[in-house]
Amino acid sequence: MSPADAIQPGAPDAELPPYDGIALADVRLVRTAAEAAAAQAALLACDAIGFDTESKPTFVKGQSSDGPHLVQFADERGAWLFPIVGDVAPLLPALKAILEAPATLKVGFGLADDVKRIRAKLAIEPAAVADLASALRVPGMKHQLGAKSAVALYFGRKLTKSKKISTTNWATPRLTDKQMLYAADDAQVALRVYRHWIGLGNTLPRPRPPKKPRPGPAAG
Image 1 (cartoon, rainbow, N blue to C red):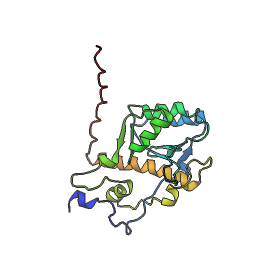
Image 2: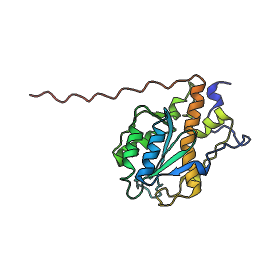
Image 3: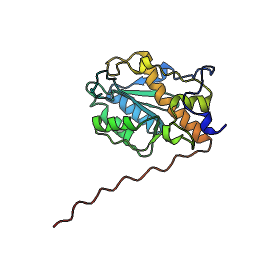
Image 4: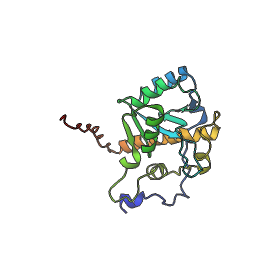
């Protein structure tokens, strides 16, 4: 069986043991400038961290989301959740420092839309971001690798991602324990997969250099 055949999304995983996710005691909800500064210090001490966002879903045709409503990061020991609801000014300096830090790699699955939303809503330009959905893809694979497939492949475990939780109101001022665990796991599982994948001798492709602006029309 080829690597591509072994990791196609949708492979049966009912018989796999469950993935042991993060404990609620290790999840920190960041609401003050002091808590944000502490999160910044812990996260920027790492060479790599897990990263993801959550947005309140929309159910009306043509309506667009104003997310993200939550930005989450994780190291090996815990996770930090930054609610982007109400007055986020106290959190912005730390968020900007973390997301724009070139020396701390931010890893996650399917991050293109997350980065786009952060750029539009918070005027932050994330740097050193690695999308594992494409980085872990091998020749012959028909689809990008998602978190559930990666956990099944590399850890032999079943990662449960509840659609009921994923489509809850992430803009609520009070997140439930289940929401917090879901968001924290999203970030930390990406980091765990990345660490394991790197440990197998893999390397991330070099980031593409930024596009040079096109020269303007010559003065006549």
